Image (cartoon, rainbow, N blue to C red; front, top):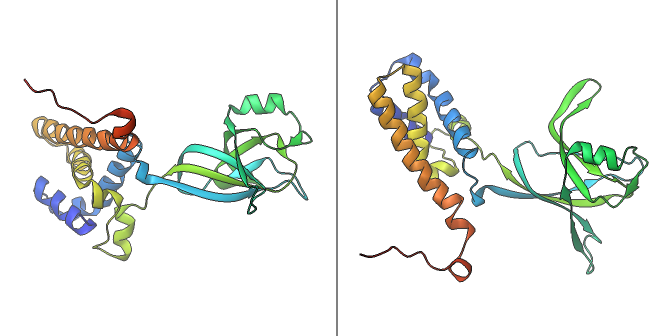
Length: 234
C-alpha cells in the first residue's frame, strides 16, 4: 500500500473528503507509525553502523547516536579492526551515574567497557545531536565501534513528498495495522461516534496483535530450538 492508496482508503472509510480533513491525513499517518514502531520491535528494522570513538589526540568519552536511532541492541568495540586478529568486545549497558562514579575524570582512560544513553550533545550552548552515548572509561586510543540498533524507518508520508506512489516498510509488509492505526487517529480528529471509534480501535488492536506475533514472536524463534507450532485438535 502506497501513500496515495492509504489516503484514499482513509477518506473512503471515514466518508470525509473535506480539504481540511485531507490536509491532516499526513499527521494521522505519522502518529499511527509512531505508535506502531514504539509498540512492536520488528527485527527487519535493525541497523548496524560502524564509527570511531576518539582517544587521540583529544580523548572523547561521548559518541553521537544516529539520527534515526530509536533503541539500542548492542554496542561493541572492534579491536584490531581490519586484520586477521579482529575481535568484538561487547560493552555492558549501565546508568550514567554508574559511569560517572566509576570513572569520575576524563583522565580515567582505557578500553571502554561500559556505555549509557547520555542525552543531547550540546556544543557552544546549542544542541548538535538529539542523543549521545557516554563511555567508560574514556578511550585511550581511536577504536572502531559497532552499534546495533532499532531505527525509525522512513515514513510513508515522507516518501509521498517526492513520490505519491512511494511506500514504506509498513506499507509493504503490514498495511492493515497502518490503515487501522491511521483510522483511529482520523476518527479521533473527527470526534466520531463511540461505536465506530470502538470498531476501528478493535480492528487496530487485532492488526497490532498480529504484528506483535510476527515481530516479537515468530521472527525471534525457529523450529530447531522452539519446536514447530502446533494447534490442539479436539
